[in-house]
Length: 230
Image 1: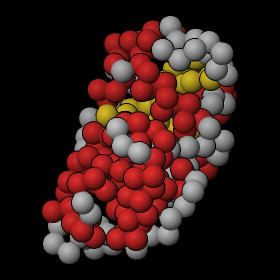
Image 2: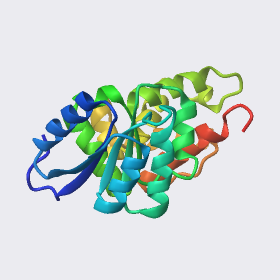
Image 3: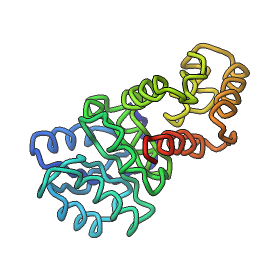
């Protein structure tokens, strides 16, 4: 559990299902430094409460009233346009890459896309909230793994040229992990990670960046631009 010495983070929860909304609120209320300042149950509500409360981050479902389609994504774009300093984490039960690109079509800074099962993993949820509130970006590793698998199987995909080790590094880079964190996760030397990072960017035709957020952006831009018809 994150320590109490971390800075205070204000969170607004938007979820139309009461039990899910209340359960999430109670989980976060037990985390030191997290302050749930408001709740909303639909598209109009989350926009009104965000404008009123100006939270550090909004955590919301991708599907809400009135149409239960992509209100969460639409609201996220409005929020980031009006309050660029507010982070947004969208929760979804879907691993369809179309939802990911719809959310990130204007950029990745301050956005997070997590599978709903992550709500039960409080530590990971809080890390995601803090990351996007600080201007970072987070893509659920479960969803990212699905995207990587689909891309690597497409004929002519540059991902098919990556070795299994390089794919592992790419996946962890897109989780906003540093080289040291990747090395620890994979139980390999930092120097080995650096070589694999260089190979990944070389094979994908992307410039190597030292900034973690730019690394995530580069991965996501590559995926988005390599979609059929794009």
